[in-house]
Amino acid sequence: MPAIVTPFSQNGEIMEDGFVAIVDFLLNLGARAICVAGDNGESWTLSPQERGRLTRLAVDRLAGRAHVITGCSAPTLKASLAYASAAQENGASALLAMPQTYVLKATRDELLARFEALGKGTDVPIVAYNSPRRAGLGMSVDDIGAILDVAPIIGIKESERDFFHHTHLLHRFRDRISIMVGPGHYILPGVALGASGFIATGPEFLGEDTARIMSLGKQAPSPETAALHHRITVLYELLMGTSTWPAAFKAGLNLIGLPAGVPREPVAACSPAEVDKIRATFDALGIRRIQ
Image (cartoon, rainbow, N blue to C red; front, side, top):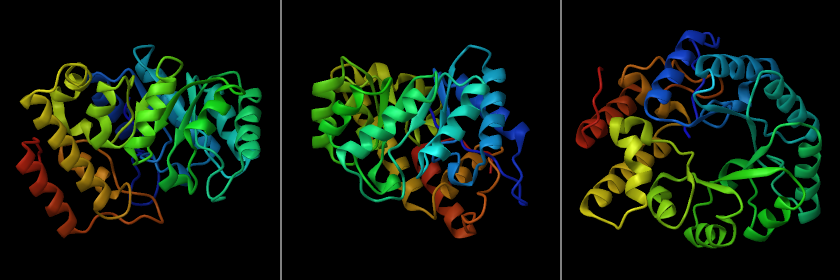
């Protein structure tokens, strides 16, 4: 379940043709759903109207072949509901929602109130998103369990970088909701422990190997699995560790021929040296590129 970028031109306009081309690319890799207006999509720069437009473009292009999940995370409930409304009106199958972002702290009651109100304010289900690095606060396994009792949560994108957390989350809730792994280096171990899939950055560059991640993850470990795990890990380190997110991801997509454009202000595009670093890593990993 990839999280798609929002291609922007140099003047900050959305490149709709580029967006549709990347939707096609992801579908051809075997995506069963596509996340629109998430972190990869530079959600912090998108208005409700832009989120709605991107959702409609993806829904129309996919035509039922895959679901569309649209991000609605925001500091305030009012903003989240506005994003959710735009997503619902344009055909999103589900919402991707963090707890209240940028507040940096939330009590259990505040977390429950946010997700309960969001669930009551929309008619589409929710995929919770736990990313302490992005939201500024994290949800414990107990927090997640409590939220499941008050909101229509069908899954979670788990981006906590503590594998103890992943282990306990999978043990307790893998039979109740779809648990989707976020960090690239946890994908194969997570699938082996029962994760339903992944919403991660990096596998898009692995071509036909992308569609084999789930099947390999469910098998007994092998040299092939170890090699794929290493490639995913190196990609994740490269993309997360180069420039400001998602500049490196967009640069990588451009290198393989996808019209990802550049980031929208305040994020700057990768420098020539950073692009050279990405290019060299792609070559070392055997990733085909056209630039």
